Image 1 (cartoon, rainbow, N blue to C red):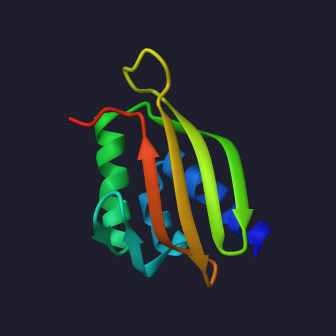
Image 2: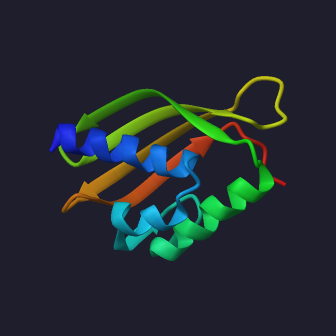
Amino acid sequence: MTDDAKTLAHRMYEAFNARDVTAAEAIFSADFVSHPLGATGVESVMKAWAGMHARFPGLRVLVEDVLSDGDGVAVRTTLHGTPADEPPTMMEFFRVRDGRITELWGLSTLSRP
């Protein structure tokens, strides 16, 4: 599953960068859990993506590193298009089941309002 999980990670960031919020329905499982947001379900992803795009209209995520082992994936990205002096860094860790992301943990240097 390692290559499939890496491909899924890239698909997620490509959809985010393309502002294709509805693609989340094919990327995340129906019982998806976001630990950073304290939210569940695909709708929580769609709402979070739309909120980020509204807050930072020029936001683009650049994937720097992707590591995977079995059903786990770790991704380091930089966020471009924010007002920060240096692009914020984000680390996301997620679990894949049946070709979809089922659970996500994350850390970011991006300031929140």
